[in-house]
Image (tube, rainbow, N blue to C red; front, side, top):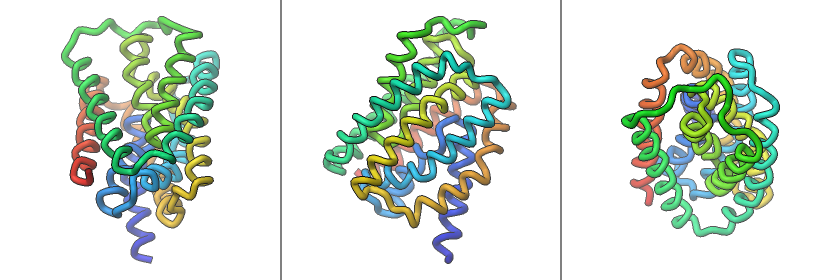
Length: 249
């Protein structure tokens, strides 16, 4: 019973971060499950997805309430993300756990470095209209979906900085679109991990409940926060996740 309560509290904390950064909370759940609970990389990724999928659903609804998400932008992102996430997840379940963990650390460090570079370089202001549509949104969906399928999470954190820097969206709009991409890709990835017995449901379900109770608050804070501060916190969040995993490698 104490363990279930711990998982609920942890899920609430991760859900708040997921709502704040538009990523569902799984990105930090994976290093926490690997370092603190000793799960192998693939099982940590699969278990985190149990929390991520319902969190992404709720966060997407909250973002859509505050900033209407255009279906014409969602369809190419989500459809390509779904297909390539399935392929990436099939690849992931057959990779050695240690190699997967090292690859995940490198993935986080690269994302943090990219986001830090963007913070200190001049960027064009957000556009009223998205600069690129189909087929480039489909290409982004494919690349992000592959990363999401391979690492269990990551599709949204790949898509968000690219949407702001290349496609000209604001940070909040980018996070909403990234959640639209993440929902189908995380769903098919969870199904693949579960089929290959790479999910600990006893941990994942309480995490999911805790996350659902808190993610709306994170979304509310994200909309009230200055955009530059939100990006800075996002970079620090990525670095923290990488540091946590380094101790496990």
